[in-house]
Image (tube, rainbow, N blue to C red; front, top):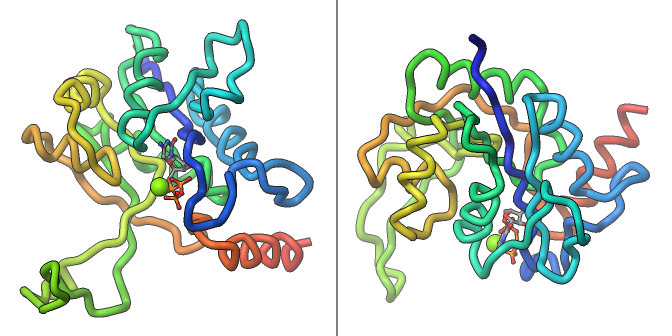
Length: 212
Ligand code: CTP
Ligand code: MG
């Protein structure tokens, strides 16, 4: 019996750094979030979309209201994922260029036995750990570091347990790691950039223009 795969697309942020709710900005003739939604729909058996509470349409059980943090929004999404889902992916609405191959790679790694799988790329900058005063605490060896992306895939039961703790993190893998889950990194895609600031959207528009 093949695994049932569901994806939660989180689009309930307020876009503080962008300056407005970026998920509704236009990219290539549709909303930014529609790109992530389409990739997620093609990748599995179902999708739950998490939107700001004010924007949730009535009568659509696959669209739910988010929370105050990304982790809380994922928890709300998880509550709407059917209980028979074996694998759950979590994907940022802010990443328009996640490929079908990337979804397949993280899902395959979970099928192969990992509790979670995340796409990661080698970092090019040296990264410092600093304290509250800005003093450097340590310098991790750069070759051991990966900048990670979404989609992230998980065994559904492990992701649910990780979120039951009510923990907060900037990604879901961190919560699974915190309960002792085994998370692996698969090769990420430099084009799968997160739209965070307005210049990221300008870059995404230029990508589309140059591919036409
Ligand atoms: N997100 C969410 N619910 C939140 C916060 C974030 O669903 N309470 C979603 C965002 O909509 C986005 C993804 O999580 O698709 C990644 O978050 P980020 O890039 O940080 O987006 P925002 O939180 O909207 O931006 P900012 O942090 O600048 O306010
Ligand atoms: Mg945020």
